Image 1 (cartoon, helix red, strand yellow):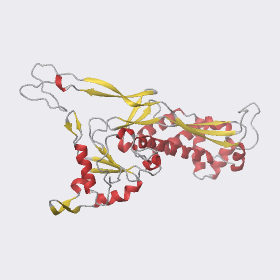
Image 2: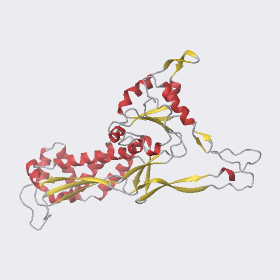
Image 3: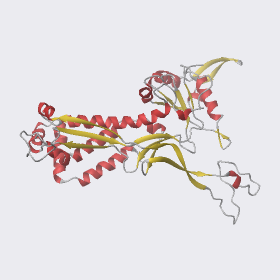
Image 4: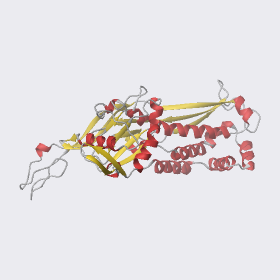
Length: 376
């Protein structure tokens, strides 16, 4: 299920459970935020701040989820979505095949990665489904809150600022998903993430405007790695890089022919035989995580492998971020005070909070390689 489909279902559930008063308030809010002056006046007259948590909760959540769903993310081009039932260790389930138990039949040798022959009236061989504890736990929630003071509310005189909170928090939540994955690629020290240990390309070739040699070296290094003794083979690869390399990658992908000079002489090369195997993915959140210290880094990840390279992990039942509003109940948007026994004693404000549970984890980087671009 895509993020958009999940959000659409969540919005439908919110709308189904909303009361008639909430639906009426939502209609007024949408019209008011669209510039309808009459709706704005009616809303300000009819809804005090103490009503916002109950009457406008569906509207705020629908607006928030719609904004969140509209945010463009990159992680879903690189990682697979995965949910876990609770906080704690992240486990990944997969089939464990023991080739030694799958003997040859009818003169046909069993080849790892395929299916064994089953003789007439013979039992089908069984493989085990096992879970592997990955190198990470999902232990934390993430979030932030914003406070709108009584004084600010008096000065502003309307509720538009709640929409600004909602939009900003939806952006933060989506960005955190990309940050979780980008943190597996690079660090704030400007180094590749720990999961990439041993995956560096010899000589750290830089991506230049021809790019042919560097990408060819990456393909060779990927294919030199094996799974169960079988060399990694992929028809396509993801080429992941930051914003600084984007212009160079654009030029590389536009080249069709190159003139190459090597020990065999000077000759024309169809560059697309190499570049055509790559799907470029600009992941500029890596620049955010590293502080721009990984501008020359680039990563190659084979596609279509049996096990995913990365998982974007969410908590079951908490796939989407949650937004909520708390009100002290001391001031009415229509003017005047609310009853003295209502509201909070400690503060005069409205608070908006977002909560999100998301992390990322590496599963199997076999066949993946990277270069710092240092050329050494």
